[in-house]
Image (tube, rainbow, N blue to C red; front, side, top):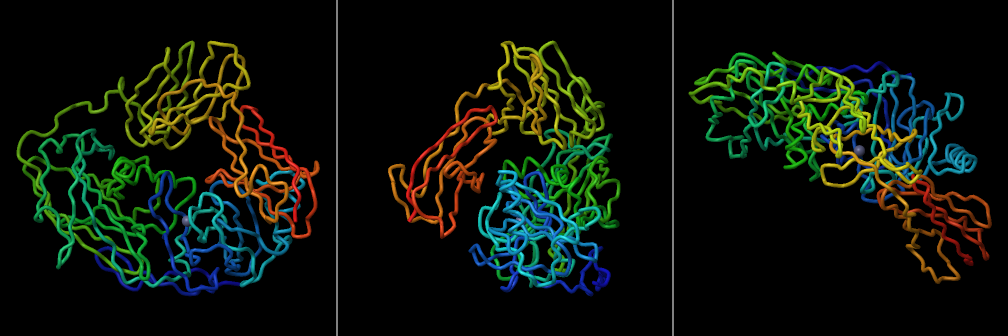
Length: 563
Ligand SMILES: [Zn+2]
């Protein structure tokens, strides 16, 4: 039985804490020295990085071990996301997660393969009880890999609170990485804000931060902002662009903690220790979304809206909204730190120029904007949009069209939960029709669509313009590591490229002499492959079938002799 998790606070300075861990008995999931290529809490599209990425020497196939006694509670095989992933529940209330594996080992491997065969599906998810597959600390459970959305071999490792499934920062819970490098401050941004912490459109200013011999500098230690950043309805807020590093690696890591102080007060602090999966998408409210997507700058806001529920703000005065008047000068002190206590600081003054404040009484008129705390239903005889409360992070331009073209909001604006879109078809609907949304990049994205009478319904995680499309094109199938004309092969693995051009692949199956065999699928590369057992030889008939969501089917047949 593992002792309770105890965090010992060693030092406190500038509202910042250095953590040390005791009473952990986890072993490493790998048998090589632990090095990370990504840390917990890094800013990613629509989520914080919920674990750490352990390096695997750039290769697949390293042995992965259970970090503590427990039992395998869940396993999943998917061509997306975590790929092949194992969850182990431990008696201390923590679950360890091993993602992007290339293969499972032992009893687990046989159970997964039997289930795949029974369900005739590569994609499976199985939940277990503690009696099914108990494991001992150090048991070999899998081989490391690059499956799912991973783009290079590594082990994505997580610790979760078993009960809440919150992701825990593994570097605070028993896994240590040498780190003597302080975070690097790269930029500052100042925003004009409403009282609710909403950004006032067009009123934000970016300042580049430089690293000098004696520390960090911005604008000769004095930056100035226009007088109309001051508003009677709110104040100003700051965001800091920071990346971090660990020893023995050139990878940039995410920021663990920051504190924003004025002369008198500590105004806003963050420390990423745990993140709930239900809330991780609120990263779109935490980071400066436009800087992240357009300029690739990783800004952490030191202010928040009331709707932002993230549990990482260890101090917050007035949500970080600082009331100012034209002519005011503020002394600002930023500290950015990692969980080893390495710290960088930036001190500067912010002058609000003399002049007129912003006196606009209604910054977000309700005929023009949609609000985070409201639900909406827009409809005409051709279209309907349903929007739940807590869908928007900020007041969002309505941009509504319900006739001829159908749109709501802007594809560039992130949302927290799906909106429901209903469009009426002007022609008789067929199974080849589907609803699609045009994304920010101009890409047409298919939506999982249900058709009832003339009405098409779909849930969309994107705002923007919606339309009914038709897909009559089947996927294509092309041999990748052998030739269409080959009559004989010595290959142990046969690989094909399967491309679906409009919607998504819904099914892919390989039959050999009429019998279903396991065909693995990697969505990121669009390839499927079959690994034959070494004893499997002789001439056989292969039939590969690929089907898209609109039911368009491609069949690929061939007799081939395995040697
Ligand atoms: Zn990862």
